[in-house]
Image (cartoon, rainbow, N blue to C red; front, side):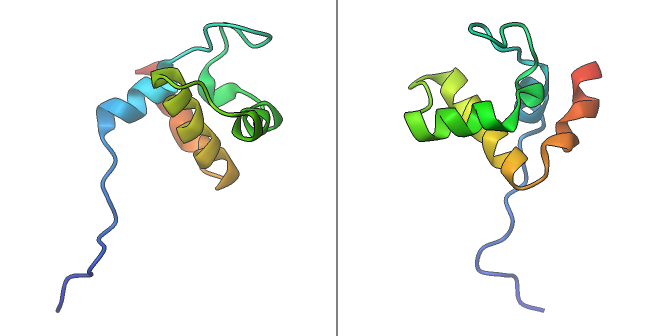
Amino acid sequence: MNEPDNPTPIPNPELLIRLAKTRMPFGKYAGRYLVDLPEPYLTWFSRKGFPQNELGEMLQMIYELKINGLGYLLNPLKEL
């Protein structure tokens, strides 16, 4: 059997745990886990522009997970 040209990338487990355990450091939702941020808030960031730093990258990843219906996958990782 031939291997696919574009295999599905395997997510980095440490990154997934960090995404699940990171809290919003500022604003209306300060202290809330990024994964628990409301989708409309993340959509607003996507329209206005995510911060140009590591937090912005993490917010963008959470946004992508949520719009694809996969945000729930990080919930169990918050407890690790």
